Amino acid sequence: MFGHLDSRRLPGLRRLETHFKSGVGLFVTLLTAMMFEFLENSKAIISLFRKNSGTSGVYRGDSTINVVGDLISCALGYNVARYLAVQGYPWLPVLIYIILEFSLATTIRDNLFLIITQLLRPINW
Image (cartoon, rainbow, N blue to C red; front, side, top):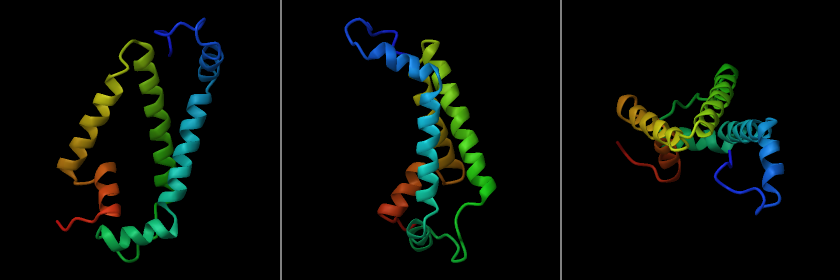
């Protein structure tokens, strides 16, 4: 993961590499994703969704299966990104993300950027 850096010059780097190899990176990623899901499904955010994004007034948040699917997707994405980075293509996950965000915006008008924009500064379409 940090192969381009010399671990002799940065004493904690070898220990950090070992932790990430043992799954700490995936754990931290999933923990962050779970916190995001809790925030996304909080009453305050759901209220903002209802007010700013045209969501139905009966929207109560994501279903359990949706949250589980999001976490599985997160784990899969982390592992693919880590694999590509280890193989020498650390830029490829970023390119894939940009392509997916653009594709979602143009086909179904729904992606992370648009959701955050609508929540923080609503745009009338």
